[in-house]
Length: 324
Image 1 (tube, rainbow, N blue to C red):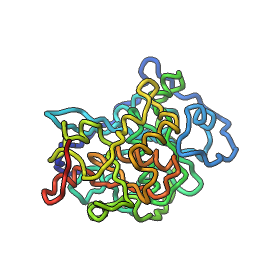
Image 2: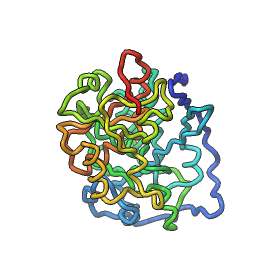
Image 3: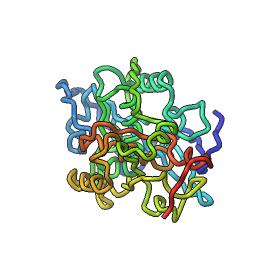
Image 4: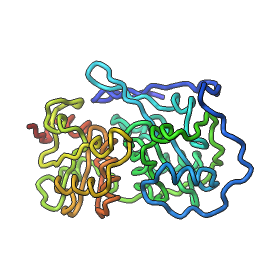
């Protein structure tokens, strides 16, 4: 695979699978002869570790670790697949969803963009996701990698997906079982039904500038929003944007999302609840999905993610930026 140059210095790193030797403290999963035969009632977009533990052996469930690690390098970051960490321990039965090498558009210089429908459908079908399955997504950080795939599934017309609140961090902290075994999901057919405007491009955002009906929300930190620090070609934000950092949506102690009314107040203060449409963005379209996911949970009907985000926007000197 050819690595693509990236403006904000994301570079993909391949990792080879290691031998599946159980490290100390990690149990091999017990053989389960009886799986739950009850139907999974379509859960909310966010599910608890308790819910997942209760449904862990349901044959309709498809669980995926979506983790990507961002490693600081020379003022930028390098994105590494989380597959190597997944091989050393994961939620029993879960597979690994490779956002870098399999679920990114191979035909663009921009990093980790939404792939074409046929590529996405082929990968998800190979992962065992299709009609009648219920997907639960998690990661090892603050949900943004899990919400990235949740948003991609939404863009392809698949709604039977949830994010695990607190992710792998909470699962392990509660002493729940960890496995090193691969999943036994059988390949199936994933039918992509693309939805317009779940992801939007630069032209959509340009058209929204100055519109009283559209609210732009920057999911980067307050310092990045103000332009005091930057990992993109130009510092600052798209003019007229509000700021709700994705990191502020999560309790730093537990790794879970804050109470829903607290989140509602944050987005209300940013002007996102009264707009006809909300477009979230960040540096590269990842953190923006956590903000968008939360807006969907709040019942906001028209939410889009600007996929290229500031990596694309700030690379075009003809486009305006604000600081301060």
